[in-house]
Image 1 (cartoon, rainbow, N blue to C red):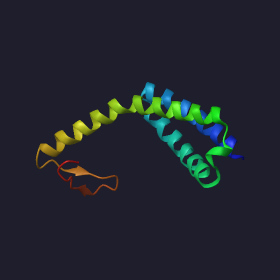
Image 2: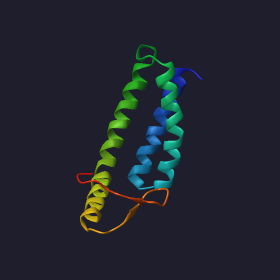
Image 3: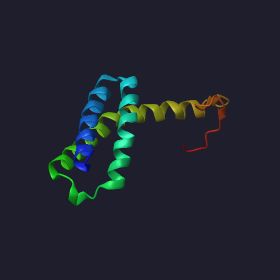
Length: 107
């Protein structure tokens, strides 16, 4: 797979990510993230910006920027909820491994 092919696959994944963000489809977002990771690693390891089709690079940037805008309100809401829980005092939060997590102030 050429760097241009990888970039085209990334553009498609970014389109799908935007659709999943708009629909609030968390399961689909997780699957897309799993697909994007190796694409990004491949691009960073083998491609130089000068070797990539400019149109695809611009599409990827525009889609990434749009997805960030779609994600921003959800991220802000999640941070606000975490801050509420932190300030509730004594409320235990747990990490992905099921162990208690201490949140530091300002986090």
